[in-house]
Image (cartoon, rainbow, N blue to C red; front, side):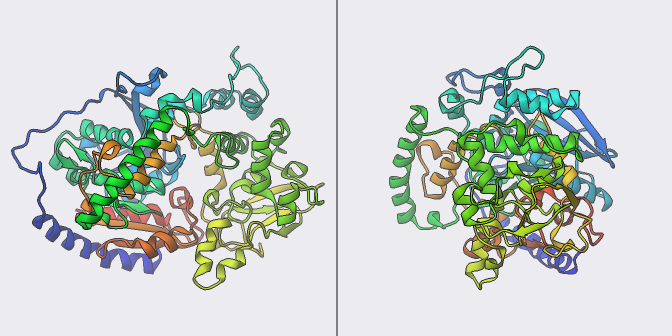
Length: 586
């Protein structure tokens, strides 16, 4: 393990434990009396199905009956259940309540539970190597009940990825069923019941069901989140559950390229300011919520290019093809019809220059559809840090091979990120690495994996950290949970904004505390090649006592998607440093 990372963990971990003990001893809040009765979970009918066992780690799907409110819009029966992916060591306790610690993780924007398969496995695996028997729960938001998975489930059985592509885009029946089409906002009124309150309440009910005693929850759970999931975790920490803040359910907090806070601007520290912001923001939030319910505001990202419904489906289908036929020449794009959303998505992700983007390849450079790729190479072109033009999709997966390439300058060249200070923020456009595009329409482009980049002039082993075969397998997942949610509820984002803006009544009445996560040990992992550290780390610093690590060569998604073994022979830094932090908790 990197010596800088190791020493930071030792130094900051001990400080975190001491500071936590002093702060906790001096703080009280309503509901903390020892005589308070233990609440009971509303979750029932626990079901668990083992999905796989690999290298000493069991992965299972766990779900509970937890019905939505009686006045919720009509919805599938699956929406009355909530669940997670559970990772545990084969030689660990069968019951979660007996695990030494449980990492419980909220996902990022649009991320399904499968999003965190790598970091969940790697953390449990690293902890096991250290003699710890911990679990990792990758939570699924309730909205995952609406995921489109049937085409993937069928293709995984048939072995033909085109079954899924043609089912979703060309009307091909599967087992006599024809895909009815992607849902629009008016079809998704049930998302009105799946805002922030539902997300944090689901987490609490699951924790309460598995570990019924509050003192044990406060000793065992490490509450964490990736990206937007870190923000949700911060709001969970200060939400009121049965008279206690969510922080009382957690032994520690962890942020994965994110931050854990319900009040990053410290509005709640000033009485006049918190009253004023609540008076202004809460009514505005009520109007926005009414807009969702009336169908005036979009409930999902819908037809937005890149981040919309079809954009995420494209990534999943590319992963499915790379998983089932990695070296075959890809037919994915040939089977996806032209429409504005898909053509704009491909144009943005692929264009090598401003001219190519403005003309959609008509300047002579061509579109992504004009080039030949193996299925693995197509996936790499869509999400690799040396290929994709969208930073938040990027992973260090290897490099394009098999033919000549040219450097990309759209939307910005990677070199601009070297400009002092401002360069760090320019990473948000397309990342800090040199990106390239194919330039020969005749050759079949192939892919070199993350551990096979020697001699590639525009990258190095230190910036390639994720196995593209793992990424393909994860993206190919159908039921129980997809890698990307099909219909992510925008209401969650609006609720977070309202909470950060100071709303503490109306929809945000449950947010009754502030700063409670800082009374517990904190771990923060920043991806070195991500823009998040420059923003969050600079303007909203972690608690002074926090264990803060930087993951060398990692992109934002690599924080939860890195390979178990890195190119320098070390375990995944994200999983191992989190496991080492957990070990300091005792």
